[in-house]
Image (tube, rainbow, N blue to C red; front, side, top):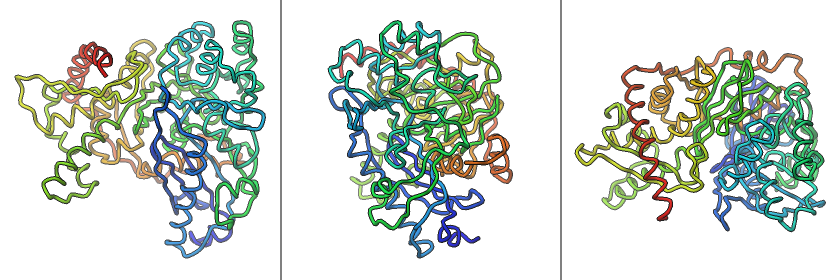
Length: 520
């Protein structure tokens, strides 16, 4: 089938991912090749001390991204989407959406970006003997309990963002095991929420959370179909027909695994955009719990270890925006893509250790370094000349530094290290610069696939196309990626040594960052 025939016959598969700053839709054909896409920009708000999106934001984003996909299909093929074979939903991992019996929000949606549950995270990690990060759903529920929130007795449903959108479209209260592993500890033998942890939580706090949570599902299992009500929420034109089968909704970490073919043990990927996280699939359990290392699940239910940092490209985006403003004031017209590529590629001319420039990219708090809130900051050695190249290298180094601190725990304490890290996300849009910084910062061979720009929405579509497949997920993905091309960066000893010098100074400077949070 041609692309148009695939769409016209209802055999195309759709993946939608709600990212932190952009919602993306990717349509794939019967060979899992992307054939159309849509995008919708949105931004979280900081309201009453909470990073959040409203219920209206979510619905507007869902309609907006699908409308943009429809426009792309019309432009490319001159047809409209009337029927889809399958669909998958993904979203930024974890966080907490609490609803009443009628699925109305009882509290603001708390996203992964919030760092307000440090005490709860520490308390739960000790209780379970299992790492419970601040952004996990159960951390927020415990905070509600300890603060005596008046709405708690009315809570009947608790979702992640992906599970909530999936429910809107299908009426099915379910969640993929990967996204579920950011709500509550997983029993990897039973492939569901841990009964042992649930009983410990009941004993300590008097609440059984299991009836509140969605049902855990594995990759390949059908998980509802697009309803008529879901169509009305998705397609304002009413052209789309109900009936598309859904895969379990997943987090962006898990669709990132699918999109980079990193679901086998000892494979690893790095997602770097608004946040940065490295995930390495484990071949044996860790020896103990680490508060800054997540235990996450692959979409088919196998454990991985994740070093997650809340901040990545947001600060250097702001600096490049400042440079663009200067150029505009001077009457110069430079396209955004060219400006980014020029500035980011200047890092190849920089000193290996960024020449005495230190950058702290903390727009929000950062649990790995113990910051409840952030203040972006740049410091430099006054005895060394300032250059654009060193400034940009410091900004890019900073984007990966918190993640690297987490990876050091895995490699030094547990001997866990991937042989290859596959990068995806906005950090790798200028791929040669992004790859160079990643291999320098980790000392690991790094690569970007030719499909990296399609991201988690493509991963969601791949998981949707996997529904009912008899092959194991790793074997299925091997087939999908058999002809894929990769751009590779081998770690250079001088670059890695330069980054290590930068990181040593960076860690000393964190004391200044902590004082800065008292000023702003």
